[in-house]
Every structure is written in C-alpha cells, then in structure tokens.
Length: 467
Image 1 (cartoon, rainbow, N blue to C red):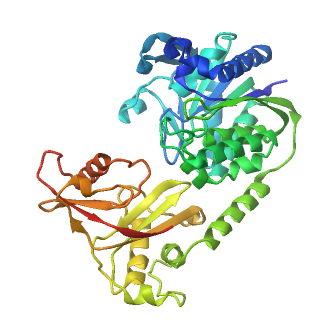
Image 2 (image 1 turned 30 degrees about the horizontal axis):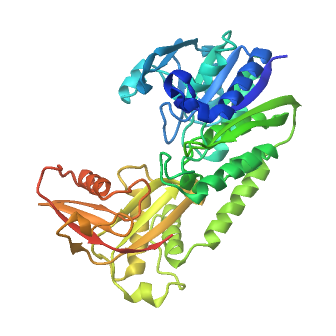
Image 3 (image 1 turned 180 degrees about the vertical axis):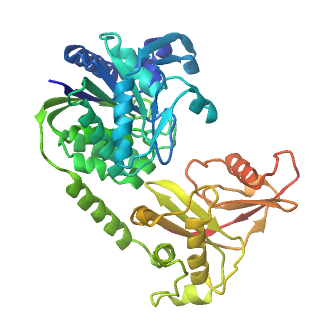
C-alpha cells in the first residue's frame, strides 16, 4: 500500500550535532533521544521518499519553494564544520507531481534551480532546517530520496491545502514520510537569541496541547500574532504537516520538549493508523472567522477607522467620508499619523507623515490607511481577498525635538528622524527587533539613504499608539 507512512516534528538546532556542540549538546539529551527515536521509526517504516518542510531555505512571501536539482547537497560549513557533508537524490517525480497539483489549486510554487538561487543571492545547498534532522536519520537509514520544501508566508488555509496535496500525491506513488522541521519559541529566556517574552511559554504549551489532542483545525487557525510575539519558526511547517495528516486517523507521540538555550525544541512521531474522511475546512474557517471577529471587537476607533478606510477604498475605489463614530479629538486635533498594516503577523504596509497634511486626525487616518495598503513601494497593493486577514495600528505623532546626544534616545519610548540635506528617514518607536539605539539609527539612516559617515541630525518624537 503506497502513501503516507509516517510523519514527524523535528527541531533543528545545530548545537545538538556532536561535532558542533562539543559537549553542549548534552544539555539537550531529551531532544537527541527523541530524534534518534524518529530515526529508528523511519528505519522501521522504510519510506522511499522523505519530504522535509523547513523554515530556512529560500523564503517567499507569496510562494512555497521546492528545490529541483537532481542532487541535493549540504554541509555545516556555516557552523564551522564543512567536513560534515550530506548528499541525497532528489525525488523529481514527486516534486513535479506536487507542482502540477498545486498549480491547479492556485498555490504558487517557486521551483529553485541553480539559476534561481543565484538570482536571489542564495546558496544552492540544503539548509540546517533539513541537515539537522537528516544528520540523525542517516545514522539509521539511507535508502531514500529527499524532497526539500521551504514554506512560504501564505495563508494558513493555503498551507493546509498544500499539505493535502502532499498526501494525495503520496497515494499510489511512494511510501512517503514527512518531517516538519521547526523550533518553537525563541524567547523562553533572556539568554536566548531574542529577549524573553512570557508569550514564548504560552505559544509552546498551546502547540504541544493542540497536537496531543489531535486538534489539526486549532493548528491551522492558530493565533499568528501570538506566534509572532513568541518568535517561533515552526508554525507554518506544522500547518503543512496538519494538512497531510488531516486525511488520516493518527496517534500523536510527543517524545520530548525542552528549552535549555531559550528556544523550545519538540520532537514528535505521528503514527498513521489508517485513512479518515473528515473534512476540516469548515471547522478551520469557523475558527479563523471567530478570531477575526474577536480581533475586530477589540479595535479602538483609530484602528477601526484605518481598517474601514482601506476596505472601503479597495471595494469602491474612492475615499470614505468621516463616519459618525469619530470623536471630537479625531475631528478637531491636527496631528500627523502613521498607519501600519500587518498580515499573519508580518508587515504588509506602513506609510505616514512627520507633519499633518489634512484638516484633522480622522482625515489623516483615512488617507494614510489607503496609502499604506496601496502605495507602500515595498509591497504589492492589498487585494480584496486579503482584507479579512489584515490588522491595523495607528501612531499619532507628537512634534519632534532635536537631540544633542544619543544618550537622549530610547528605541522603546522614542521614534527618531534622521536628516541630511534633502534626505530624511523616520523610524517609529518600539519596533520588534530594534532593541538598541545604534540599531535604530542604522535602520533610519538606511531608509533615508544616508551614509553613516555623513553629517546628519537626529530628532526624537513620542507617539500615542493605537493597536
């Protein structure tokens, strides 16, 4: 009987590879033992093809990437150990079949050959999201072809459908195993790669609970804002895995979970028990709709106005009038605003002004919501299909003040404006990943096209943030 024979979750910290860890890997002994159990299970199942879904290959906002070289190579040279080399045959028939079916379903696929890697300035090699689990698998089993897939920043339903496609292709073609490579939160400790956040533990506990309870719809409809705050890299791999598992009855074996370096590592085996006719789509849509309604209910008037402005413009191609719920502050105060739009936790557009250009705050929001959604040069214009999945924040800016010393700056409290001649760059305060004053200045200079060695002035400003 051909088809999906096994499925797994694997973390991918290179430090657990003994040559790289040099003793530090012993702090992750539960993870190592879990990966060895996965390797043993794969040896028992003897799949003809192993598909690995990784976060760390070529990542696109609108497409899933699949490597199409006949041979797939990789090493740990980026981690100081180029002698650790790996070589696999690519299962190009499965790749082609997945591509053909995804195209029919309207899911974008980027086929990555050598020229494509060079075009995007990427290495034509397997990333560590693949190499770490394969390092352990190949200790036990080597008689397989590999398929290398990097998830894209697509909608959860698209990722779920892509997982469905993998499962459908497996039927009648190959004995296939899927490994969803991904770490959980990177914010469990201050000593980790990102600063500590209580959302890290919350994210990890919820993911583990969802898989323990076989709640695939819960995985697909997971709160992407929470995932973003937790600093994870595995959720979208898990969504594709959920799509593949959805056609089966299965039993989840959570083998291990630990986070000694501030990053959550989970290993799991999903034992395939047989086929299932359950259709999760309606349940997924219902859960997503509930989350959208909950988010809308928690908007304040500023966020609501930004959202309704863009929605009205996209549907009617003209600006909306000021609605009745707008209060006197928004009608009579004249202050500049920035409108930021996010989709699935990722920035989708942000535009504003350092000085007011309209009669009041309400008109500023109406105007810049449309600008952020349709004119941000970094992104394509928002489509009507995207509107339900967007979230909004509005920053109302206080007048800027010149600073004489960088000691006056605080990237969490103050935004900055850098100016040199006609060149000007602005960075809002409290932006994720901008933790130091030097980072804040460097990014603002880069936005303005100002060289760090040029003479420039810095102003700081405070904001009232809505959202």
